[in-house]
Length: 579
Image 1 (cartoon, helix red, strand yellow):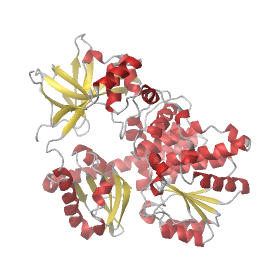
Image 2: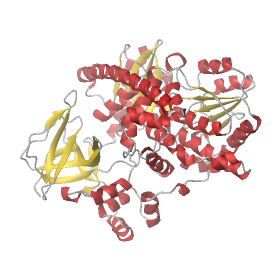
Image 3: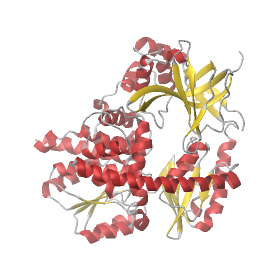
Image 4: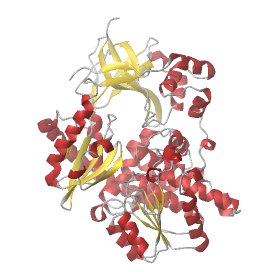
């Protein structure tokens, strides 16, 4: 492999120096702010010390006023309501949030989530028929899907049902007029542009905020007593799971939501979920814990069984009941891990044998479980640093999931391949696809052609950008506290990478993990303080000992047996270069 290019992320030095003089924070943080495009003192303060009062008026989003009117009529007239949500974490948390709020107003909606193996994705005709067979409803609220389900919505309307859609998926066409749609991506209103970063649970939060404001003006005591701030744990789960941009309002919502996760008093369902993942009350919970410990447990049911189980867990007011659900979630997740392990091994053999030199990976086996392909796709996109689409087989069709970790916009790529696909949709970095198995080879060829054009205009060597140089002795408690202010990290607010120069490893690195694919070693600073360094999936490229090295690293908190320590994660290494 060609050596990667290391380069400092560009920034205006004068901006960083101005922020350093204006703010009571260290220069490395000011450099990161400048690299994030933050130049004004007021913007820096809003970023480092966000407040919920910085959130916009929910009624600025198109159709929120109409949606609030619908919910008010439901509450005031005790209308019969069904809530249909998608089976991923964004969909589950959206359903849970709306159901929790309606419960406060003595409204008990019937909840529906697609059974993936039988009803497919989103607002399919199959789940619409299940809703209609349950009872006669006045209103159906559709969450995290429905924007492009014109025929299914029309079918509901012909049965005398009013429909409200709250969704964040891109629209193929503007929705039909009689249906109320809250979706900035389906709006031709210019002001909605800034809200396109919100996932569905973020939009549901805005809708709930608008409802509470309206009812509080009417002096409704139930609205006056309700604290929507306590629901930010749900918003955080869905927002982080859906990999939307963690800037603007998303960052504010997640910043405060993570404080709820890290508090001692969590809702029973969240407490049960955290305990099943060995996250104890009072432990500091970060974005990575949500991504790698909690969301996989929730997603496992949507992928393999029934997503109503985690919804029931999150809605439960009884801890023992919630813990029973959490144990079942854990068992399902273990089953998912076994399936995933087997599929990963098979997929790795495919890549090595056939597709190692492809610009993008398109992998398929008719025996693969379609509910797990998204996890494999995300893993391979990260490990191979290129877009990846993985297909499983389900009911005579290949169901796939695509992920991008290199900045490639998959929506743009798939827009050049529509004739080969049955259905597709999603976000720039995460898409869902269905295709006839006979068309997969042609799709692979087209996918790589499109990516080839994208790469032709990009540098031939992979470029790794770091924020600034960092000495080991600078990584103290004060630095870690300031780094914490930049959290949570995610899309458009990436975890900062630092350059550590001319260090030596004196003891032989150790491999660890079930597959011995990770490596760890210790570094010692000039004050003889030791620091653990971990290289995830780096066992194939272990740095040499007693050699002067440069490292690119991220700085992280590690918690083991409730003991907190600081460690470095290696991004890349090279033999130190002489000046």
